Length: 181
Image 1 (cartoon, rainbow, N blue to C red):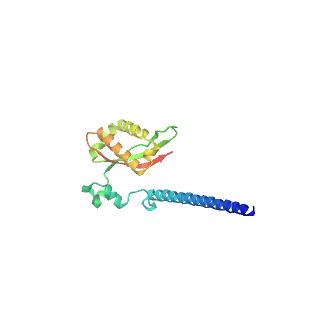
Image 2: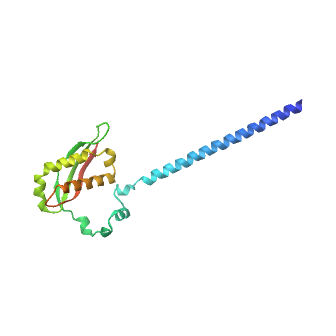
Image 3: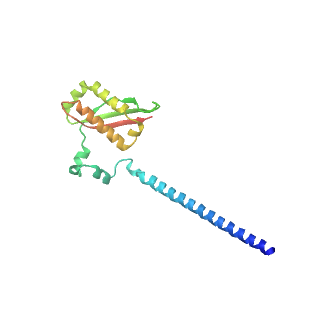
């Protein structure tokens, strides 16, 4: 009788050891999986950050990669010379959002190709303000909060304004104040 009891105790201890080993392996596997996922997430988050020294400006390599092939090496004078500037009054518009509580306050200057464009801009100023207000108010916070979004906004403004001009062109738009709240 004592032999049977000893055999039963030995068999239950072996079963408990097997169960505890299996449980330990499962716990280690789950912890390893969590560690790997955390490392991947940390790597992806660190990879998307821009270096602090550039302040969001593209690096020399990025700028040369984005530039057209014929303008790959612009001369020093094209970078330092700016055309005639035409300042515009400030704009304050509601941004496109579900709550309607976001707004954008922006001031900008237009870089013109030549002086002959200034009189046309003076006469069409209300038209240009209307175009700019419509474009700005059609944007969401997500669209204009990135550097690429601001560049797309500039391109859209230049294209829309140039469609309404006869005597010249707007070369660029420069934001002198850009506040989102």
